Amino acid sequence: MDVLADVVTAMRTGPASSGRTEVRGPWGLRFEGSVGAGFHLVLQGTAWLLSPDLDPIQLGPGDAVLLPRGLEHALADHPDSPIADFDPAVEQPPQGHGARALLLCGTYRLDRERPHPVLSKLPDVVVVPADPGRHRSLHTAISILGEELDARQPGAAAVVPALVDALLVLILRAWFENNDCPTDRGWARALTDPAVVQSLELIHERPGAAWTVADLAADVGLSRAAFARRFTEAVGEPPLTYLFRWRMTTAARLLRDHDRPLATVAKEIGYTSEFAFAKAFKRDFGVPPGTYRKQLIPV
Image (cartoon, rainbow, N blue to C red; front, side, top):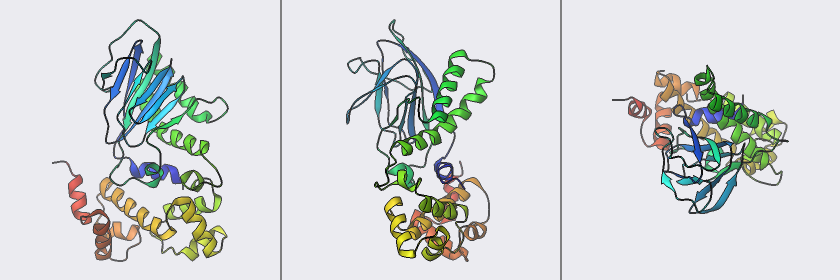
């Protein structure tokens, strides 16, 4: 079980949207706030990331930016350049005659109402700078994307969406690796602490098992007290609290993506009765599971 991949799959509510954006200076593009997570790749040239709440951030070739909460922001060739509203999915920006930059801009559709801590604990802007010595998978993917978008070779329509989908995990993985510190709390530590990540794998692989803290501790080779402390410090909540969260997240995904009976969904996440599951789900989501499923069906 790959915990990070499982989390990303659970959070995603649809395909990513993206667009190739070629600009020549002077240029400045404003991106409205989005319900998903915005992202940018600087494939060629340079850019500045601008936001009222942040100092300007200079970006170069190979740099990747993720905005987990869809923060309104702008990209420009210089912090003082005029800024125009822009939607990469429907338009191309006006062109100047200065230095060229090639960008890939888009949005990942994510469940922002119930974000997993992997996303909710991230800063508003995540920047993974190009670093030839680190994150080779990420930077190889960015390089291939740049070639595909610039050359527009046959088959690019199939290659580009697959690479864009993979980028979300690659960016998150690179960010956690960059911020991994044994003394820090948070998911950078949770995904690199062998005992914690092993327990997370067990929960994600078998959310319906009758887990106890003692069971999880025994499986990872720690005492109950040591495991509970270590898990809580890394993940930010106790093991059984996280287990409940993941059970409800899994239930929501099953209700969204499948037409299984509610009794089957209940059993898969560890409830012996449909009534007990419905009660827990309503307490967490505010509506019964049947109503939740109906709300997702297009009219």
